[in-house]
Image: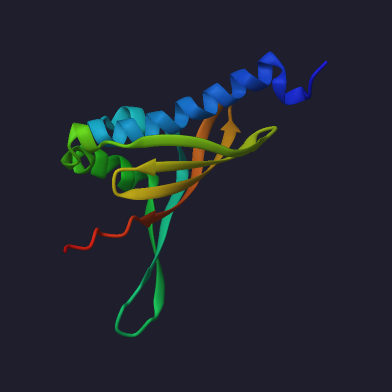
Length: 137
């Protein structure tokens, strides 16, 4: 008999984690606020560290679940063309009711902390980083 992670229930839980992550990123790209809202815990915090190039001082910027849903509803994610909508999802770790997931998207990378909350997987925290802008020749 193999490790517990090979059990059908574990595979099923991993599929549910991936499904919630895809609801988040695909909902963003499609402007589907209902889909993204279903993937988020209502107290989600999405954060990014930004550093001022002149002063080298960093600050932590944050948006809430509500702000993320509203920006999705406004179509902010739709600006990414369908041919550029990268949505690579990797479960970095999953144990019991907690998971860490990485999404590589078109212009950014999201690190998600997810939890099984009231029977379904939701995103509790996101730490993200913009991809570097390609240098022009």
